[in-house]
Length: 58
Image (cartoon, rainbow, N blue to C red; front, side):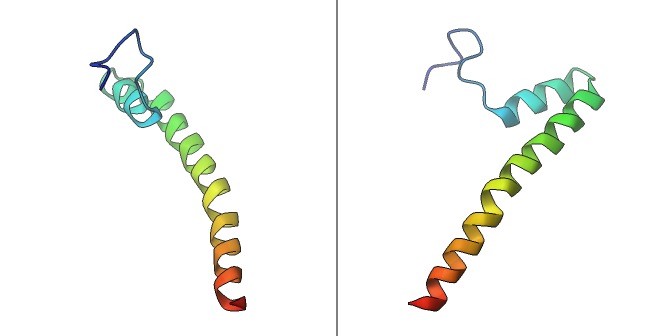
């Protein structure tokens, strides 16, 4: 939508990790993947628990 501008404002976390991997920063991209995994897990696990509990009670 923004055609990549202004600057790096339209970059997502996944695209930043991919660009770091392409540039040869394998440690940095791996660390970014671990952080992304932890953030998604912190959001998904409680949400899964809440929605599963809500479905059984109804």
